[in-house]
Length: 103
Image (cartoon, rainbow, N blue to C red; front, side, top):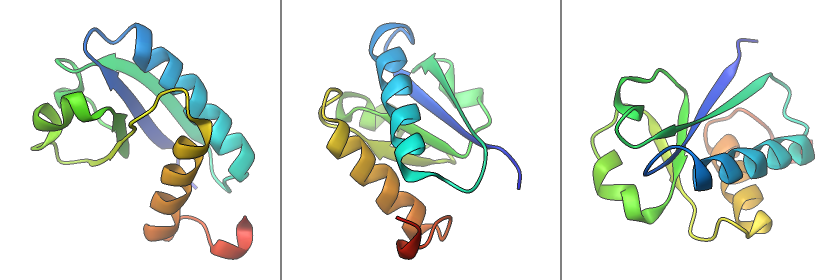
């Protein structure tokens, strides 16, 4: 299977997007996704031209990400690993990338 690329996005592309990248990597390790995942962090201004399968960001940037041609997941609490795991898992199930039995 091809690589699944995720971009984490914050204002400057340094602080919170880096922490979010680390937490998303944790989520995929816990899910044992049956494909390769690459997570990169970037700024809101640079994400528009980026090629990726999924963008993960925060409600603060929802308006800026409204017109991107990529799926977007919004995370409310960067430090809530359960929220991140749940939203990633639900997205993967919705897109038929994992089965519920693969939990």
